[in-house]
Image (cartoon, rainbow, N blue to C red; front, side, top):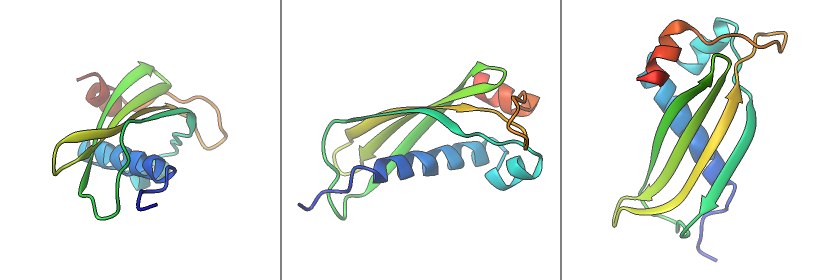
Length: 115
């Protein structure tokens, strides 16, 4: 059909989220080494226009603290050629320790998400 498979948008959300956290000074590798896990507990994606093969896309991601142990990320998938928003979405994550118990996010991460 010449369009990108719908589940790829969720992969792009993950790339955007990973980059946002890394740019805030907290890589996924560091997060897991410090005993934090951020499993997805809710996801939503609204498809507005199809992405086509060879489109240059940008994932615009922002994050906000919902509670001391929950974080929400918002996403826009934008085609660079015409700045069309192809999809929007959100994910909500719980902050857990290695035993799957709720764990408060580190202060530096909370501050970055509240900024």
